[in-house]
Image 1: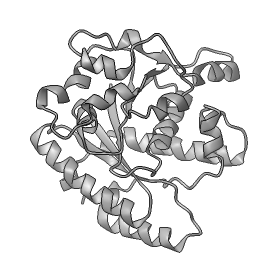
Image 2: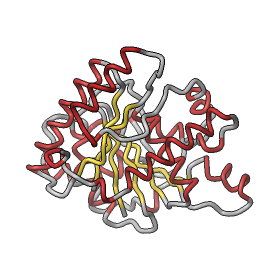
Image 3: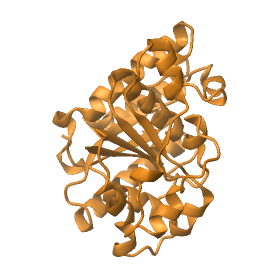
Length: 274
């Protein structure tokens, strides 16, 4: 089972959108996947079509990590029924560990080593998934460190803009320090350039800067700014299920991106990227 954290230091770069795009690609590819929504805003839970439920949310599961049963408290994504209707068969699993504001109790800078292992403890007892995607909050506080401790790989999301690129460089340094101290087997799967506007000279400049700064850690393809993305997410649909040429093109980008993220040949630390 591969466990992949999707992280960013800066909000607004489309981190949750990338998580949902990768989840959509995994569902289309028939990869049994669990999405863990660690962001207290719980946007991934909403975007996956999961409403109020009697299942225990991820924050309360973390609080009782030694005894809690994560597998018994996952919820099927609302997308699954749509996929079954389209294909006429039972799709591979896409389940959600629901996000909630309660998880925010762990998003503090002084989180101890024992608390950092809470999600890893929960995940150690589940079976049936080939892939776990963790949507992290846009910070380097406790919840992100909980996610990184539980993960094999980290995907960083950035927009080709000055503050986002600078934030990604800081996140890379923080990730390397974390890896050395807490998680020697953690690797950087790469950096996703998201919300790219091809007609923007500034974006073209920043993309070139990112290629120079990060080398082959900058994943391909880059993800263009998608005019329909807010509508797709507002309808709680997978991008692979949305009609139109633009959505089909976006689906192809995420299919390719997922292959790059899962490719074990791309697993490397920042220090070994060149």
